[in-house]
Structure formats: C-alpha cells, structure tokens
Image (cartoon, rainbow, N blue to C red; front, side):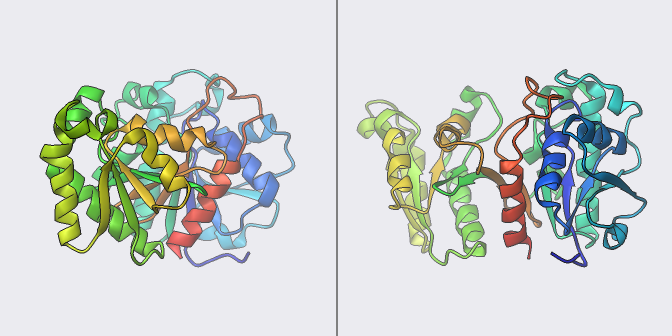
Length: 330
C-alpha cells in the first residue's frame, strides 16, 4: 500500500491500557503504510518492548513526513502539550496524566482532520475514569468528538460482520436513558442511521427498531414508552420514506437481524444494543460514530487493564477498524 496524500490517524488511547500494544501488534502483523500514530513516543517504544520488538519507532516532527518513513517502522507524531513521564506510568492503573494525554491526542488528531491534513480517525481505547481524573469534561470518545465537531447530533453504532446496532442513548445512567427515549430522539436516530448507512453503500437500509420495555411494552401493560414515543417516531420516519419498522421485542429482534431480516437495529439504551454485538465477539467488532463531519472508528473493546503491559492484547478489532476507516474515508 502506498502512502496517500492524507493519512489515517490512530490515537494511542490510554497510555496505561492496551491501546499502545494493539497498535504495535497491528504494525508487527501488517505494517500499514497509510496510517500514523498520534501519541507519546516513549509510550509506543515501551509497548514495542512489551510486544517483542521487531520494529523501529519513527518520530515525526510533522504528519506530512509519513511519506519518508521507511518500511518496518512505526510512525508516531507526538502532539505538543502531552504530560511528561507517560512511559513511566504503571500499566493497568487509572492515571490522571494518562487521561489528559489521551484527550490531548484526540484533540490534536481532530485538528489535523479539520485542517484537511488527514482523512479519517481510528481511536484506541480510553478509560473514562482516567479522563475524569485528568479534568476532561466528557464521559467518553463520542461526547468529546461531538463537542470538537461543534455539537452536531451524533449516535454510536457497533458493528461486526453479523450485526449492526445504533443507540438512541449512550453514556448515562439507565434512569436518564429511559427519560432520554423521546419521540424526537428516536426520530433523529433513525434519520442519522439512514443517512450514515446510505453513505456506507446501503441505498435503502432496512431499520428495525427495538422497544424499551419487555415484549416492547405488550400494548402498554409493561410501560407506555413504545406507545407514546417509539411507535410515533417510527411512523414519522416511514412518512419521510425510511424503511423503519417496529417496535420489536428487544429479546428477539437482534436474532432476526443476524439472520438477515434487517440491516441494522436501533436500540434505546447502551446495554440493550451492545450486549448482543459484543456477545458475538469483539475481535471483528468496530464502533463507528455516526453524524460527525469526519470518519471516526474504534475497536469494540476497552482498555483491558488486566492484561496491559503483558504484550498479549489482540489487535484484530483495531485491524477491523482500520479496514472500516479506509472504506468510509476514501
């Protein structure tokens, strides 16, 4: 693969998690020539040592130097403003410095994309408690990227070769999520899903909408959110020409989608939607942020503090994320 004029960017994630290791292992396995890492050089060198070496770290003064990086090198651009001493932090521990550094890498990468100097973003896992400890006022990637993009409406989609799921509510308490299931929020999710899947090549995506309550409320016996909010939003979407149907019982609709009846399932809450996807395996799962003015993809797993520093992390989900980013980012 030749160097493109605008590379893919991979942020290192939490320095104390497995993000740096899955990046290193990805380069050891396939050495992508169209991507560079936005992160701390010392952290990536430490991860390389944990993973058995075999590469050199090429420190870039400017992302445009990627074209001059020789094969068998891991290209790293270290943005200004990272905390000192990141490579000395113990793996598997929550660190305010690691949280602040992860946020700084994301900000710098988005700045490059917004300046037209990169074509897509792949983010290695961050730790939400570390972000909070580092003074970052966002609960996760999705909300931070939304703010950096000017507050545009966004949604999270988790996808693997068998199932796609889009969420109406994301990182909040279950009580807040239930309150967030409104006719307007569901309808906005359906429109974002439609537009995003069309950009991915599905001209008329078949959208299944899962209910919130057991058996999708059973006609109001187990809750009226389906009657008051979800069904009216589906009717609004259908009137606008979307192939949206439901609400379906949440405990069976994902099986139907997996068998090919639907292209995507819209779920009301985080765990309703993500448990089915993750149960199928995180190895090929990716997280795509829908609604952003740029492409952002990430692995379908977290920082895995329990194995950080061992060199045993599996890069498969990161590799799937890179493939997806190339498809969406051109």
